[in-house]
Amino acid sequence: MIVMAQVGIPPDGLAIILGVDRILDMGRTVTNVMGDVVCAGYIEEFERKEDAKRA
Image 1 (cartoon, rainbow, N blue to C red):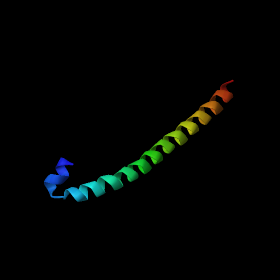
Image 2 (spheres, rainbow, N blue to C red):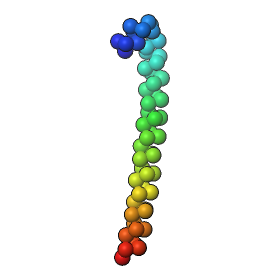
Image 3 (spheres, helix red, strand yellow):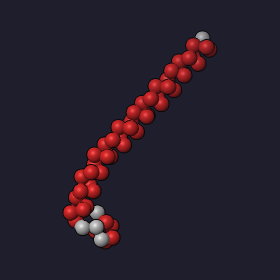
């Protein structure tokens, strides 16, 4: 916020940017977590198949 104020963005603009970014950040977080879950599920399934081959 300090950097944006020094660049010349007015305080009202900062409030709008931070309010919108909060929503966008939640979307990015959901996408990241879902990607991690899908990757972990794929690795688990692959490992189960590999263990079944060895047994």
